[in-house]
Length: 200
Image (cartoon, rainbow, N blue to C red; front, side, top):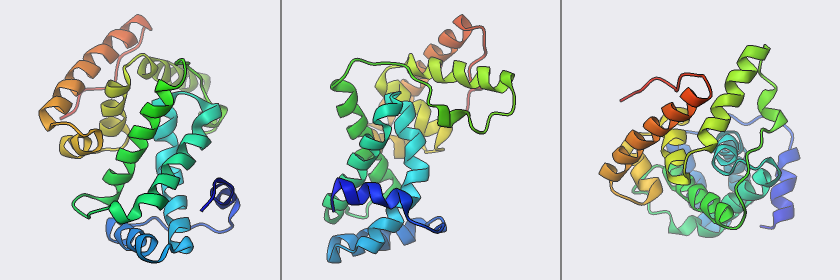
């Protein structure tokens, strides 16, 4: 599996239905056991929709978004046999994505960009401005804080799932969420907006 073949999957025709965790376990097993390209293609398309926004909000670099996403999926291809089945496939994949994002962030000076593709669904200027402020506020968080906000608010993961993705104790995640919410509120207050309502 090459970077070129990964990129070519972007242009494959037809929409594939979303996969369940059981479907994904089967796909990962097929990749691990038989290097099944069709199984990988299915997984790739499913995670393109789910991981693309996650990667963007973590690295805040539209020009590198596709590269980091493909690095994640290449790692999935190469390491499918290492998936033990003790967690959801999505938890395993998002853990790989988090580490790839951190690797990318360590290798460059942080920037804040707003990808034009994020504006496609905005109906009016007020919504656009609100979205712009939220993106900039999240960009002001540390990578660790950005992860817990991303996974709890945007992905709906539980604390235990986030802990597994981040590779740290659940109590550490709870502390990070607490501090991330406080920091996000402060940034949003500076920008003249209210932060997302507290949950959990």
